[in-house]
Image (cartoon, rainbow, N blue to C red; front, side):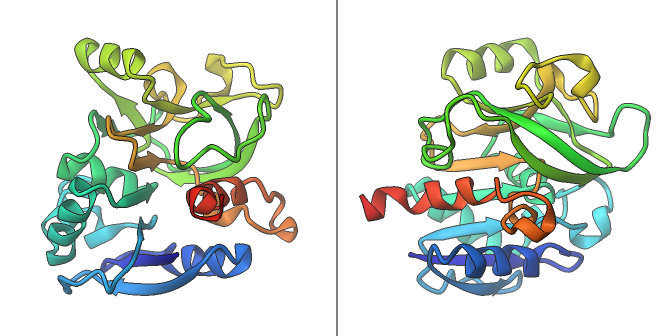
Length: 230
């Protein structure tokens, strides 16, 4: 399996994502420049974290118009796997591959720390290797991670089991005290209806080596390639 990591002006987690694929040895990996229209034969596209185009207007609002995104949207609509991490999640919302929107963090402050995630749906192509009942530990680093959706959209996410991750405590309990940004219902990650596009604010690519404090991010990347192996 071949992973492609998109580089936008302002991306700062592109190397982290590249290194995560190398570390986990789940497949080959290459960089994809934002000005290109080719996905270079990749099977999985990663939209990394950072501040694409300086986060002018809104986070991800300008990146959605990059030439590479036309190819990514077409790829996703044909069933290709796409994962957007942090700023990548914001780009997926802006381009319409995922529903809802991001607002500035509650308290209007940039938040950078480790959090715990409850896996609400471990039957997706991105979570099938996540252990039942385990709260995953990963870092966050964002100023606009306050996920919001109107009542109709939220009901749809519930009905279609598309809420994948929620912020929780170490035991997996979901409560306001462990919501780092004010996100609606502690939502940290969602998936599209077809199940091939995931957006998440926490950084699995920064949690793939023990020396970094957690290896829980490995479960995400190992899940992606699991069906090819099995």
